[in-house]
Image 1 (tube, rainbow, N blue to C red):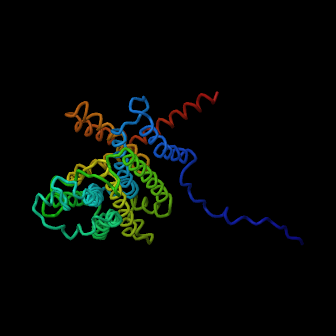
Image 2: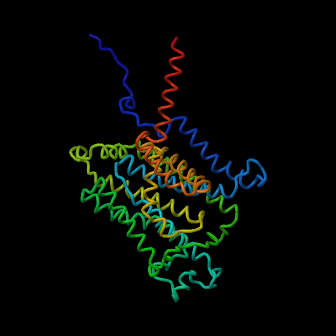
Image 3: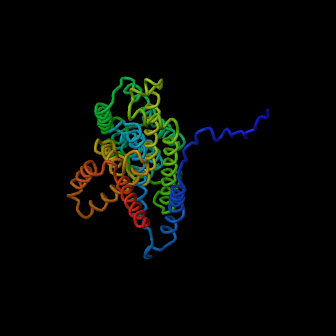
Length: 385
């Protein structure tokens, strides 16, 4: 009796293949974004004269750079809200803390070029302070302050998130607590004795790393850095969502109790993604301040945090690209409305959020997908005969 030899099945075919980070179209879009940020925008702004039809103005560079910082915050919100089901109304606090850490360094870079020609920042001279407070000790070090950009929002998120998640606080209660935390921090930073400039905050920045901020090349460098950071965070978020970690996060969003019964600890997963989202907002704030030229407690207002949630909802939760689109759409509309119809902007924002909630639960990205599906079915119907 002879035995038939069957070819061995490769082990790789027996294992489930990991999902691709991006589709070919997705990688094409990322490449196009990279080229736009690193090549096209600098050429249109720095090389083409102002009178040229394709010239990208300094105002547009600043506006787009600012919106890209907002888009990073919206992406962070999507990770915690869209994929984990935790609505935070306090992410504006992490954004502002990162901005203040950068602002402290920029204030020290002014040197004696302030109004009072003192080594101390102008607001300290005005308040008759004689020396820097202890928390300004290493503020003249760029490396140290960049560490603070990550450490301060990250540690606050870690401590707050640990106690909140361990106490099983969720839903609207968690949203209210994060909003209260942000409001309390805003009131603290409004006080002059805290050493953060009071209600005026920090402004009148001169240079960064010894390079004048007023130079067009410096503004473009910050623009490119912001764009690259946004793309990098998008790819990181995409990798997280496609990983086992991301699938557990989505399971926590859909049925946390079942996740616990299967042996997973939701606390560790929720705390990890919560801290990561805070770090992303801190980095966005640090990039925002030198481009806008000011940071004050207004960035900690509850309205600022609510707007981050609105960008995410308008663009489309649990899509990653949706919040980025939402940040550009809402802030682009805001820039136009506040110039053309300043008294109607808040009404437009409220109407937009209500319309998206009622008619577009999946946001603008969901609408685009529906339209694409309709066109595809229509094309297939035409080809059928």
